[in-house]
Length: 318
Image (tube, rainbow, N blue to C red; front, side, top):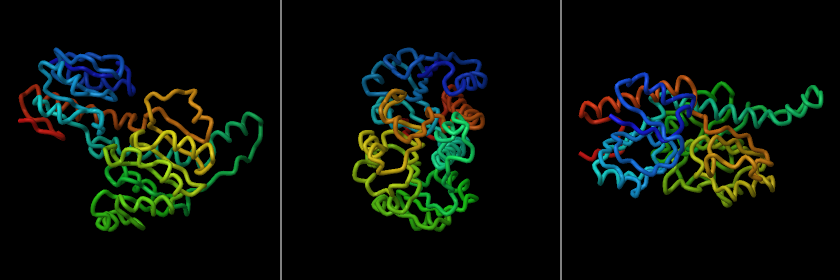
């Protein structure tokens, strides 16, 4: 089968080569960018960060599977794919090691902002010892928005820091509070409560119609002025202009971002003049996560090759 990988050959630490080693009998084409224009001649698409629109799908003459190398399918027109009889599948974060890796990067951003990494570099540059003064996580309140695979992995890792853990769950918040042993869990309509109490607000939820721009001018004003916003999910959850304004006016203490309003972001953007700690969408880019995802992707490709139904499908067109 012929498989299109919509990114460069070496993206995410050579992820494509991991899949190739598992499936040497198939032909893989690395597109080299995130823009898909023609799907003719391909049996399977790995879209990565590319838009898969109805217009693009009309060019597909034999496509059987859109297999995401991760959980996010917000850029895929799932309805249009279904109408053309194309399977759409992802790799849930909690089966591949991805959730664990993203949770680790979230804590990295939390600690980096708390201990003022930029200030440390200045101190070393100027041969100053003993500064800057940092902020300890101990005793702080961490508000986790989204208690799926990543949220659960983050909770597990944060407990030894002796923080207060609160959260927002799309459904059954009371049940989630009991099962996860959190101090408080609310539903989507309770976001204002979480924002007002949290010293760290960590976004761990999918991007969809209801979550688009949920962190905006209004909700940012509900946060403490000494609180940090951490986004390890999708850039579209946060209104770019509102975040830039809040940082500029110091309405919040800072932001840790692994995802952005556009990817890649412009490194000369004014927003990076403010207190932002940024990483280039590498939350899930670890050896453990990449191998787990590669194995899941390879399994579905193998199932399609055998004429069988792939797993973790968002739609079943049969």
